[in-house]
Length: 177
View 1 (spheres, rainbow, N blue to C red):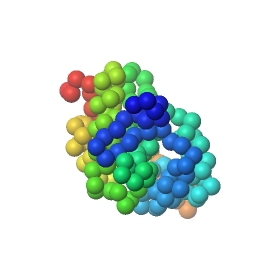
View 2: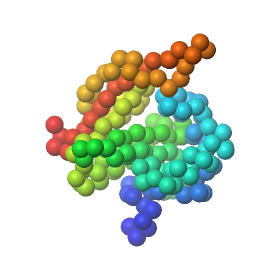
View 3: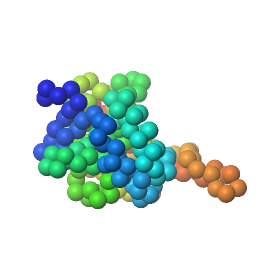
View 4: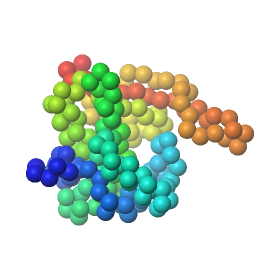
């Protein structure tokens, strides 16, 4: 892979760094209320998506997922470096591409690469109500390590009281234990 922007390729996908031309594709999924339902941000306007894209271009932790066939960018995987040779993983995909195995395909490739490069532990956090997310983690061989009760909030109600949420924590270790 001569192109330094490409991180990995799978049968159907190119996993790469973000570029300015991704703005419309990024806006399409980050503006969808259903897509960002469990994220710590609200649906974005085009202007907010443009600002967010600048951040994505400037970090190596956000990986764009592009269809090989059409070159449409359909989502992203987050691989954030943490202490103790660990990575935190997350993913967000355009709703039109849910249920087709793209998240699993992209995550598998990135997990394999990370473990090969010496990462000891990859973990992910998700809302227990986001069944599709934790089912994917389990299918990828992650084990549920924790269920934190009402440990986080992203929003407040009309009385400015925190709307507390639970969190599942999943992890996959390099030695598969």
